[in-house]
Image (cartoon, rainbow, N blue to C red; front, top):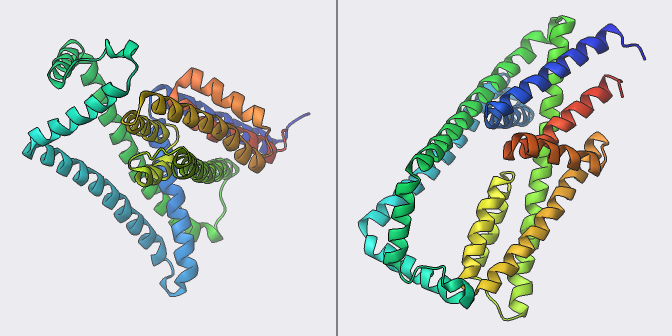
Length: 343
């Protein structure tokens, strides 16, 4: 099948977008792209909402949407850092109480382990602290690189958010100016590619919310219904359920954090309780992959196997960020080819 000029130009920009995605994943900048897409999409949605609800505002709704979203992001970041700083200060004020809590937790975990594993556990907190200090001394360069990478990733995410906010505002302004002006076929193809990218990002974001909700429901059933039936009450169950939903909105990483915390809490009951919780969480997350592929697949008319294969290949090539971005990348490619009537 021969392609017409419009299809060739559209295909060229699809390839161009794909090359940029691969380069960004290779140089570890994709987290910034994802955060930028998030703020860009939120800006557009918020502007549409304000424009419908506040007709008299007119074009001011576009500026107000950016300002409101910026304030919300700043509030979340400041609150997060403020909570972290206050926690560090509280620990520094009363280190003995903190050590007592750690000792209690350590004793509880050590007492719940089978006898075969107890020999690998330090006898007391002093020995544990000595081992930790020795580990830090031996791996100080590695730990420094990890901390540096974390701060670098955080900076990239913040920069991506700022760029997304600016791009969202500029796009809103262009929508007004260009209503009576025409653009070249190349600019039109570039914009259509960006619109498809934003559209599939919305699909994936909606899918992540549904997955987080699904995960939260199953976790609540497990913690509040199944375990109590056997006379087991996991501490902080309600807080863990809330954390499951909130952190579940962050793909992969959020689940890893809340699952680690949940297993540590289960350790305070018994070793086998922690094993049961871990197995249950593994089953939930395997189902999540299929659910994720199903929701996105329905939107772009792709099979579950297609998306699962794309996710596995992307994870093997680019690591965790590849796994996170794989549904967006594959959905973008397939939707672009379908709209260009190439497939």
